[in-house]
Image (cartoon, rainbow, N blue to C red; front, side):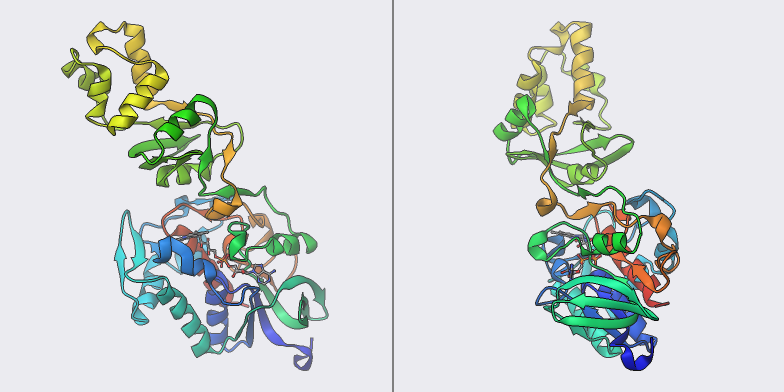
Length: 392
Ligand SMILES: Cc1cc2nc3c(=O)[nH]c(=O)nc-3n(C[C@H](O)[C@H](O)[C@H](O)COP(=O)(O)OP(=O)(O)OC[C@H]3O[C@@H](n4cnc5c(N)ncnc54)[C@H](O)[C@@H]3O)c2cc1C
């Protein structure tokens, strides 16, 4: 495509974390970049993230904190743009931050500071952002791509798809990225909501409704994945960080196993208080309402000393393996992320460029790389945006 016919060298679809990072990096290299965003304002997910304080990275990031059909795919980009790198950028822009929990870094004040940093980087490097532009599709055209928008066609040499996942449609999320990938012949893995509350039914739901609002630390497992953090009982079932983490691994039919007292020597705990009702022994370690409701749900009452070996074994097994059968998730509207995405086999792990369509890139959440709760999803957005921005 001749320069005269191009609207930009590089068009980036989506002004979220990944798209803005990519645009600023590419523009700093002297590329003529244009960002197209459907919302009237850029970075809406950045603004609501982390409860309004944007958990912008995690100091403990490793490739093991991500789900992907190819667990090695994220390694290259993550190694070349680390939590320290985004922290340097945050500090250079005077954004104050703090570490909250397990390496999670948050803004001291508002997520607006992180969005302000990204917009400033785009302004300084000369990457304009056009908002209120609904991108409908894109197709190859001589020497590049033609992007069809509600406001007409635009042409570019390289096209970066940074349109995010399906979660929180109320913030402008669309399935454009997946549709574009399919239209260019790139496969998509199965998609499902992740970091999402789980729905229960039957007696377990009744217990959650009765104890709605009760929260407690526990170990929650789904298959081989296991997380130590808080569980929250709700009117619909389970939530809280440990459940959100496990939910990304949950598929219909799978069970969630809750260890109510991880690391506690249960036999010793009961033996020491063998003459006391097990409910009151548990109420010393668990929220009282939970100890009572959970024992009633499972039919445990009476003194440890009076229980048969079989009853004692069942109590111990149920305490460290409370097995729950979710009937579903709270869906994309309540999910922080979409698990799955553009298949990593179809992309270069170094540049995020399509292997079959030169000049076409996919970055951020639209790719089949999904982070745990705790700043990992933004770290992937920065790292993948950066990797593509260096080469587009
Ligand atoms: C409530 C909530 C809180 C979160 N908190 C955190 C957190 O604290 N830390 C963390 O690491 N992660 C967090 N996440 C996840 C994180 O926000 C996402 O993983 C990250 O924003 C993905 O970045 P992205 O640039 O790939 O996509 P997005 O940020 O989703 O950006 C995609 C952009 O593309 C635009 N777009 C979509 N379709 C079109 C179209 N057809 N035409 C034009 N533009 C389009 C969208 O409007 C959007 O602006 C949170 C998510 C949610 C929902």
